[in-house]
Length: 347
Ligand code: MRU
Image (tube, rainbow, N blue to C red):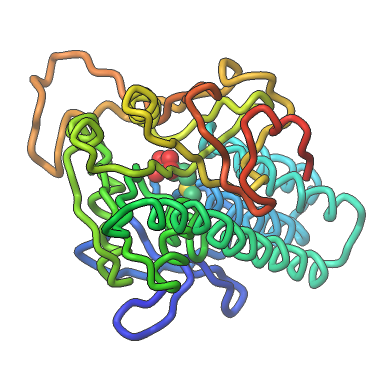
């Protein structure tokens, strides 16, 4: 994506390190930081310097490579490596891409591949995620084209939630990919972005991306999206996903479920855009997905300003589960998939 005239990925490998755009400082400050150890990758995932399921996956693949590189010269290399990789797998619980990517690279390490080859496989995994996003863009923009053709004014209003853009995926994004593709094909597209309390990924990150990509967008309060749908101001909902169970139940940023319910009631198509690396084929249904609970201070404060009485108890679930029956389809690298058909796919 373009920022101040330069093309960036949200993560790249340079001089034995990965560089990332530290997402905690956007939109005020564009800050790039370097990570060169597995511990630094774990910390960046935990403190959300990097976030979004596919990006967490790619960073974890590098983290696994770093763990191997670091432990090579340790006194007990095997114990050192196993302990780091275990910590990495547990950095955040909900996005399946983390464990998926660690396991992909771990298998190669256990098969005895040399360091240089492992690094090139990590880069393959990264490039493959980018290719998947491009395909998601092509496949999803067909849906947007149909909407434009069916409307007199040709204007398409997409509602999205959280950030499933290039910041969350190395490049192009998942939910944003059909929008970028539609814009490139000169469709008239406008995006409603829910602020996404409590961390405001929608307002802080997605709006920042669309502003720099010159895509028409409007940020709205999280609570107003039902009203927009009722007033006929939304043609389609597209969000990303953190983990999809075999039956199509989907974990994504908390609030996604409420959007899906409101979309159903208003007969608005509701799509999840995600690569197949986000499907957890070991889970029967969404009930088995572990939902992350985050620090209560994310809810209690905005910056330094308290919002809630300090003694009032709060609960801060970071994700929720949208049942498959509320999902019109999945926009994937292999086309638009009916929720009932997810279980028939494999990687
Ligand atoms: O807590 P976050 O910001 O990591 O949550 C991210 C989301 O819920 C995204 O919508 C999801 O990871 C899809 S990213 C392509």
